[in-house]
Image (cartoon, rainbow over all chains, first blue to last red; front, side):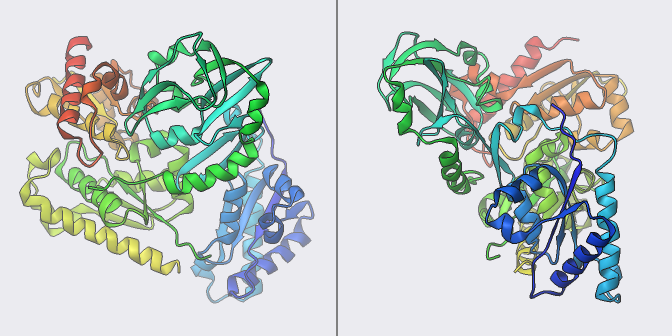
Length: 283
Length: 135
Length: 129
């Protein structure tokens, strides 16, 4: 799927207490006089996750103007968009130390326009369809990219469930596969096995842990992903796709209401990821 | 902003030369023992192969590259695929570099443990300095 | 090194124990009983475009040892236009030898060394000229 980002979005620093913030505001004034098609973002609107602001951000080419090394604007964009973006940090432009604020602002405005023009080349920006923002909610925690697939249900044990007509497919969430690291062995239960909500339904082993598969619903196994026995790495590579575990005929499909929605799991998953991902080995 | 940024540490792989092995050992010491909560492991091979998490982190957060020789694979790779590292360490700049033995390219010998510690402490000092500047 | 025909490239990932296992396997191949036959190179040096290294690689049989499905060694070698004669995935070797589960990236332990040995045996048995 090809997405051409034709709109332009500039997010300036809002730091009233720093010189860089003042220059950022002057840059915006210059930009507005030079190109009225640029959307000027709002730190406040983005922080409060105003839907229109999020939509503008995610559908545009983005340049941030950071007033200082704290980089509030850049961090906010990272939080709300998985795409690459450009940024200019006012305080590192050491060759402009002797310039007035207005001179700095004009120079930076030109730099912003160049960056926006560079990203508006005839080569369109492509989005990986496997992980498009339409299908996934994403969050970066340090170097880890957490992906929560929309439209699924999630258990507190970090397994997902997807309705497929009258059946339910289950698997391991991206959070769980990142936490356990490389899976090298999967032991699946037999077709025909009946389980109750929360029962063990097979097991897997990774470099970090051996753990049971905990079913997020009651029912009978009608299909299992046998390919995982030869290719357990699919659990890590594609936890929402090739790495699925079972298809279950549920006893009562309304049991899925006991699980978290994708949005609920997103908030829960982020907090859990902050504590669990990137844990170091201690001697 | 009350949370200080974590610092990514990128070490050269360290095959086929003792300096690389020293760099790797010192980096692991910092990542897991000395500053586990303040640092992020950036896997250089994954970074070079296109790891979006690694490259994304290095673009946005400060990084320290640790190279075992003057070829500076980690420093050059980081700058090329992400951003210029905040600090570039080259083991060749250390006095002890010339006395490293060829046997040490795979397993650290007793004679180099002091160098590993020295390098690890230098990395730690850089981590602390970077985070202090961000306050 | 002009008559060397077999070059082993480990991923050497520093984030996981398997990267250290890949390194250990490379050490066992290139520094002990088989050192006359197998050599190694730094993966980042290849990616950095060291032409001498790349030219040598193109004239050799290349064996990659990857610590995880991201296959950094294999992908990086292929990207510079070199064919890989044999790819070894450490997790797959572990799946066939589950008793050799390694320790941590800091210390793979005795089992990790044995897993490296399993990798070496696989290359010796299945790798061909």
